[in-house]
Image 1 (tube, helix red, strand yellow):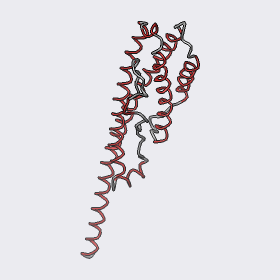
Image 2 (tube, rainbow, N blue to C red; image 1 turned 180 degrees about the vertical axis):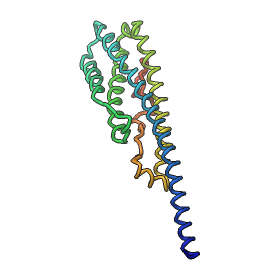
Image 3 (cartoon, rainbow, N blue to C red; image 1 turned 135 degrees about the vertical axis):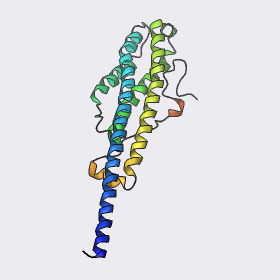
Image 4 (cartoon, one colour; image 1 turned 90 degrees about the vertical axis):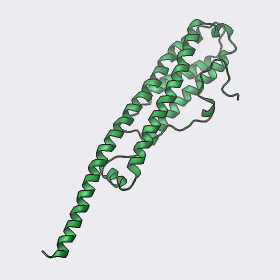
Length: 205
């Protein structure tokens, strides 16, 4: 074996070794970050579930107000609440499409709740109901926790997506079946908050 051949083989060996080490390092890092995203997604689902669990009590409390006549709105909330059970997102497939579908369903319920809270302003007896006030506090707290959980999920997703899209990681990612995840996008009027504020119309600035 002549000197030139030896040098070529050494260079090829170094490239293979470097690539192999890079692939191993990437795989470990990607798995760690992907598991972190799944954990953050679990927190998101938990907070949305906490809100969903409050809906039946909220609906029953509002229905208990003798003069409350917004049955169409109540039916809308109940329908959207039941529809959430059909929106299942596999934590192993947090694709942009899956996240968008989940967010759309949740946003529909948020919108219906906000409209309900505006209507409730016309019912002093309902606003004075202790059970209703307790639900108000719980819903407001849950909305805040949802916002935090979504932000944490987006931060984790950004880190993972950056990792798998960088060169040469994007090559490894293709072979190892790691794909970018979906984000929660800012919703229309997000600057005014998805408010369950019982005292303000969310459509007013």
